[in-house]
Image (tube, rainbow, N blue to C red; front, top):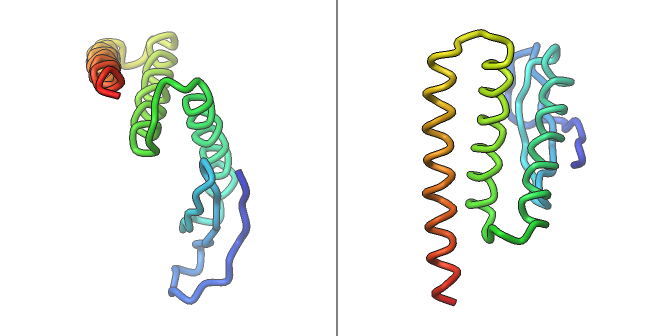
Length: 117
């Protein structure tokens, strides 16, 4: 992950910064409130690490599929930590079940597509 603060040709509110980040070898320009910049950079690092781990495991091909799997895993982790903390247990458990089901369906579809090649 790389990050630079860019001079901007787009008019942003005065309390917004524009930053360039790199996630899984792709560049993105993001606008972020100045006070949230550090948290966003942490989020970029976490997403980049998760996507690289999925790609390097070799089970998922294609940037869009890697991104979906990373999003599902991160959401699952977030919901699991909420469950552990005892907050929003019922909605979080339901969401975790749905995420597990979606992950299983995605894995099954990826296995089916792998058998085509």
